[in-house]
Image (spheres, rainbow, N blue to C red):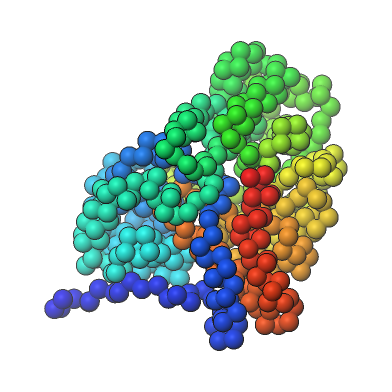
Length: 472
């Protein structure tokens, strides 16, 4: 192209993310080859079951790859892009124009995990040979759109191509789970798609719509809204509905990991006041902490794995939240504390056989200081994989260094992709497997474990651990 910068070729280094030292890299290559083509086990994510149940073609590259991916849109926003211009929050936007905005700013993603995932999607999933840029935006949009219109890029075909053995969704407790029902009853679909019980809005009196939500729950189950025991029974019944549709876990995103076990009379009194909107912030925290203990008790009763991820200040910018809604890129990590906060729950249930509690955090310091020591004692506690801002190559390496010397390799959850970006699932698991291969290769090179043991470990942490921890 005369007078313009030539397009940049998009090529993936086959040794990407593996150690630079030649000897260690050779070990890592061998270890990665052990797991490169293993099926994907994804026990926590946000891809809608309806995509697979309906199996309709995806609309266009913007609506699939750009607008819903807050990893991408948040950095575009930081570089000066109006979120409305890229379709965040359902904003009405010309898909091609939004794609041009993204491609023009592709350089801002250099060095980020998002760039690595997207490069994998472009090169490996679509076979695209040129990187995004202002000059390639239209051609890239056309090539992606043409591919998405074919049967090979329908959701079920991609599910099979990605070798997904199990895929979990995240669902509201009152969801009828019709997509899951249709998949389970469809003899032409052979995958495993699992709902996940996500009750946050029904447990936290500080949630904006708590009073409306618990009223809907009570009405759906035919109980008075101010009956605390009925409230607990309604939650248990909704959990049973999820289990009947294949659920294996209940997920809890809370401001902090605070737990407390209240007397039933006190808990009922707080609850009755909560449904009237009368609790102070301190009282709301007490009831929320008690309800986490109740959720643990229910997990023991019905077998659902309990996952907990505190430490995020959601909707950091009020104006952005009001305009674009949740998941619009400004949920920001805060410090998390587990040891004291979880003690009331673990004093009661930490030693109960078959109770599984998986702890996630975005506060890296908590992994070595608290989570690994807890998982190194309590048979019920497992170390959640690095997620959200930490599901990136260097952070994955820091995670392994933080937890391994205290808790070994056996106390982890396996990798969690935690994504609504369906086409990035294989990219994210590929990154995790390469990072783990590199970490284990260093241990082999340093004489800390044998090569034979490293081969066993990498298969365990890739495949066996997520199946066992999530009771798959």
